[in-house]
Every structure is written in C-alpha cells, then in structure tokens.
Image 1 (spheres, rainbow, N blue to C red):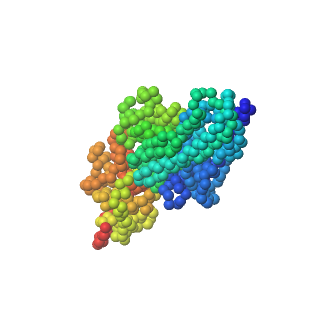
Image 2: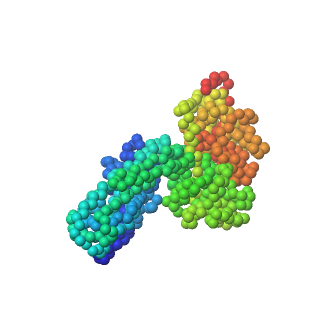
Image 3: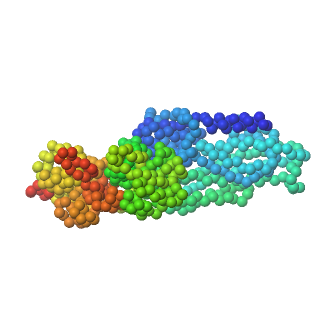
Amino acid sequence: MTFLWCLVSAAVIATAAADYDCLCNYNVELEVHNEMTDSSTPVGSLYEFDCKEQLPAVTVNSGWAAIAFEHNIRYVKTGPNTETQKCQGNPPDSDKVIITTTGSPVTTTTTVLPNTATAKPTPKAVSSTTTPSTVTTISIPTTTTTVPVPTTTTTTPVPTTITTTPQPTLTTVTTTPVPTTYTTTTTSTTVTTPPMTTTVTTTPVPTTTTTTPSTTTPMITRPALTLTPSTTTSSTTNPPTTTTVQAGIISGHTNLCPVALKSFTSQDRGALAQYDRSCYELVPHATSWIAAENDCKSKGAHLVQINTQGEQDFIYDLIKRNHNLNTWIGLHDMNHETTYEWTSGETVVYTNWLHGLAPHHSAQDCVYLNPHDGGHWDDGDCGSSSGFLFGSSITTRPHICQYEIDTSAQGNGTVNHHGDGDTHMCPSTVIQHASRYHGILGQYGQSCYEVLPRYDVSWTHGEQLCQQEGGHLAHIASADEQSFVQEFMTNHMPTHGAWIGLNDRASEGHFVWSSGDAVAYTNWAKGHTGNWDSPGREDCALFLPYANGHWDDLPCGSSSGLFGDTGESHPIICQFGLSHGSSAVG
C-alpha cells in the first residue's frame, strides 16, 4: 500500500509540473462568448498573442473551442489565426474553472468497483473507516478520483449493500439585462458492495452509510444591475441542502465600452476590461504620473479611481493578470499635503493604504497600486509631462485609464441622422481653404463647420486660424447642434479631440465663447473640474467625439513663432456663417 501512495504522489507531482493545452489567438481581437452562437453577446475578448487554457473534455460544435476564461467555461471561434499549443507550467489561477465539493464524513465498508468517474479503474477490495470529504480544484468540469485509505478492522460475515446516487444539481441565475443560466451537474455514481465477511466494531446497531450530498457553488459573472437571489436544491435520501447565489455586478462585457477605446487599446498594445459602469484601459508604457493623466485626458478619461473593495479587487486582478507591475492610479495630494484627491474630481470614499495609514512624504504626491504587496497603495514622485525633472530621470510606471459607460444614449431609441448637410452653402473662401488644407466641411442651421484633422495647435493658435477665414472656434448653442457636431465628428475624426471656442481664460470658472455668443448650453464630461494640474490652468474646452461628445477643459497650450506650439495641442473645429443668399435647412 505504501508503494501505491508513492505512485499516486508521483503522478500528482508530474501533473503539476506538466504543460497544458492552450488556445492562442493571433487576431487583433477575438470575441469570447458564453454560448456557441454568433448571435450571443460577447463577454470579453482575447487580444493578439493572448493564450487561454483549452478544455478538450468539453463537447463543442465544429469551428468552436472551449476555454477557461475568468473562472467560467467560455467559447471562441477557431480559424486560421487561432492555434492549439502547449503552454508551459500550470494554467493561471485567474482563469481556472473552480468546482468546490464539500461533504460530511462517511463510515462504510466498501469494495470499489469500476465507475464513470475514473478513466481506467482497477477494482480493489479494501476496508475503510470514517474518511473526511475530499475537496478537489480542477480546471475542467467534474472529474473526481477517490483513493481508498487502508485500515485494519475485526470482521465477521455481514451482507451489506449500499447504493448512493447523487442527483444532478441545477443552478439558475436570472440577470438583468442579459439572462444567463448556469448549470452544474454532478456525475451519478453507483457503488455496490457484494456480500463479504465484515464486522465493524463501533456501536451495536446495523451498519449505516450516510452520504451528505455535495453542494457546488458556481463561479458566476456578476450582473449589471441588482439580481433576485436564486436557490439551488440538491435532492438525496437526506434532507435537501440549499445554496444561495448572491447578486453582484457585471464585468467582462467590453462590448459596452466606447468604440474608440478599442482602437486606443490596440494602438497601445494594452488590455481592455469592463466592471460595473466603467471601462478600463491598462496602458503598459511606463510614464510619469503627470504624463499618464495627460494621456488619459486626451482620450476623454482620467486615471482610474477606486471607490469600493469590489473595484479594488477587480483592478488588482487586472494588473496581476497582465504585467504585474506597480501601476499609477488617479489619487494625489499635489494641492495640499495628505489631503488626497481623485483627478476625476470625485470625493475620496475608499482607500487601501498599507497599514491603513496615508503616507506623509512631502516630495511624493502621486499614488500607485503595488501588486506585490497585496494591492496596497503607496505614493511616489509625480514627475513631469516630459518624463524628466531638472535633467534627472524620474519614476515611470504603467497606468490605467477609466472611462464611464454612457447609458443615456439608449433613451427612447431615437437617433438623429444629419449627414454633413449642404456644404455648397459654405463661403467660397472656406471651401477653397478646406480643399487646400485637407479640411472637412459640414453645414447645419445657419452655420458652416470646418474640421482640420491635420492641424495640431494650441487653443489660441486655433482661434487665430479660424478668424483668418472669417469665423471662430465652434460655439455650440443647443442639444440639437451638439448632436450634429457629434455625428459629424464621429464620421470624420472619431478618435481625436478638437478645440472648441469655450474658455474661462479671463475669469476662472466664468466660461465664455470666443465668438462672443452667450453660453446657453454645455455638455461637460463628469469630473471635468478636477484641478490636479493646479487651479487656473485648465481654461480651454476640448470636444471629445470618442467620449459621447462630452467636453473637457484642459490647459490651453502656448504659441511661439520660434519654437512652434507647446503644451496641449489638438485639431480644431471652426464655425462660419453661411454665404450671402443661401437658404439654410436644419
């Protein structure tokens, strides 16, 4: 028997050290589904060079493969740019499909016969006493192997027949808005003990075997809104056991993220993720904290803010699954030592400092998350946008940008399709300018608009260029005009922000249009008033087509005839009146 245990131990060690089957993706992006149909809603994506554990034991349709993805069995379409390989080591814990089985001690005399739970069983006659339940964690569905424990008893002939048949367990979870059904089924196994000479020296009562049915808690994807808790009941000869699945928060649905964000993630060779009402881009390039926040703001976002333990756990796992390096988040105390603020302008309601205390370092004002210390936070020097401070190299780290998922567009389902309008009504000088400098024209109401994608200038320089052609930077007076400009920009320059004429350069907090028009409408992004870059410097408005057309205020940049424009520089949208005699529609 000692020899048998040695063989079992050797097999376990060999399995732990072995490579595993994995599916590798060489597409730019490959959608992950919860069903083997093209019509099912994607629950995530594999990006180029991503590899996930393949589950050959799961039956799949032709052209599909089953993989372990965030603790669930998911499906991807196979093709010429996917390949089954052998990955080194063990599958990552962050993707393992976890099945936990619990039960009470079992007292029985058993002869183990071949059953469906083992590929090639060998019958062995053994006597066993009370044996604790076995908990096995595996990366493929429901395969359990029990090794009998040798014991010594005094026996007399007692015929005994024991049959234990666990019933399948069905778990149904109803989600809003996407209904999802999770089913966990335990394999039925019948063990029969033929008559043999046995006496169990315990209490003078007939031998009884009681098997407590296993209770399996599935790993589930959390829903976007509150779920009604459902129950799972296992039917056996004993009283039923009930398991309650807690309601949670949806994650992994990157299809909810802005379209432009996928383009940014691909360009940065980063990682895209979704949790609750936010999407996240993990940018692997190491920069200073200030350069990182500037990168996020240029994309219509901010460095990540963390408000709950759930968000902390999600961000920590995102970092661990990817580069596993110290990573900038949006917290800082640049304005007042030990008074921490989020760059988004949101109130600080949660922190995760080491030992629970905020650090007190006068020269270190910007916060990062440390994945090697349980995800605790610490502060470091913020650096500058150039990555250097007084000629000395400063601390650089990867960062995470956070984007809000805008659900307001769902509304009543109405969509405005303006097109570009009648651009022949634009002034002839503007038409000629657009032709010469690769501008794009649009017309709405009494105005003509010219976006210049190839320009990359400060706000002041942009206003001067518009005035040279007889106009101003765009001044948006209503929700309808905003809708036109958003559609116009999405059609022609969807991934870049552009200067518009709103500014508070003359009086902090008092915004005016450069055209002199009254401010009757605004469409600010949430948290746009964050003043991490110091009060009074974020004075000029940028239109963000990739952030649902919201506006953000940024430093205006500066112009110099000798060195060109420095600081913030972006394309521009100019607005002009129509040519004389034109009759506008719209």
